[in-house]
Amino acid sequence: MADFTALIRDVPDFPEHGIVFKDIMPLLADADGLRAVVDALADPWRDAPLNAVVGIEARGFLLGTPVAMALGVGFIPIRKAGKLPGPVEQESYGLEYGRDTIEIHADAISTGDHVLVLDDVLATGGTAAAAGALVQRLGASVAGFSFLLELGFLSGRSTLGEAHIERLLLVDAGAES
Ligand code: AMP
Image (cartoon, rainbow, N blue to C red; front, side, top):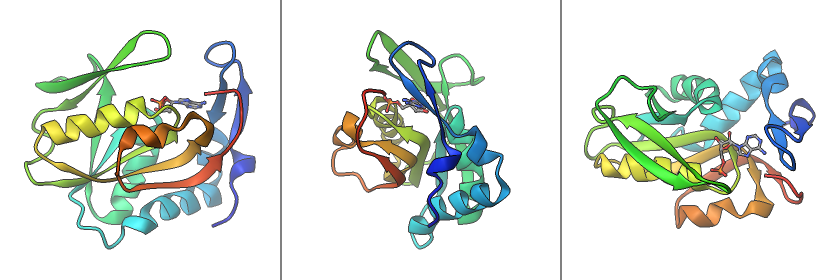
C-alpha cells in the first residue's frame, strides 16, 4: 500500500496541551487516498465470516461505513453516552484523566454474530477494549480490530489481549497520545 503518512496531519497541543492529534481529514479529502485506505482496511477481512462492521464515534464512522460496504456487510455505530435513542448497553473506561462512557444499541447485534471493530487511531486501547466488551456483552464475538494508525509507543494492543489486530500505519515513537 502507498504511504499515506503525508496526508495525516500532526496537530500539536490539540485537544489539550501535550497531545499531538493525528488529523486524518486531509486523507479523507484526497480521493485516491480515501479509496486506497478503505480498500486496505477491508482487504485482511475479505474472506472472514463477518456479520457487521462496528465503528467507534466519530472517525470510526467515516472509515467504518465504506469498509462495511466494501465487505458486503452492514455498519453499526458505537457512540458517546447519550447520543443513541436506545435502549442501549453501555461501558465505561478510564482515560488519562477521568472516565468516558460509550454505548451501543442493545438490538444492534445478534447472539453469535462475528463483527469487526474499527477506529481511526489505536492509542492506549481503552476505547477499543470497551467497544469489544460491548460486542461480547451482546453475545457476539469480535473477529478482530482494524485501525488506520497505531501509536505503538502507547502499547494499546496489550489491552486487546489475543485479538486479531490489523493496522495500516505505525507511529513508533513520540511523546504524544
Ligand atoms: P485510546 O482509547 O487511548 O486508544 O484512544 C483512542 C480514541 O481516541 C480513538 O477514537 C481516537 O480517535 C482517539 N485518539 C486518541 N489519541 C489520538 C491522537 N493522538 N490523535 C487522534 N485521535 C486520537
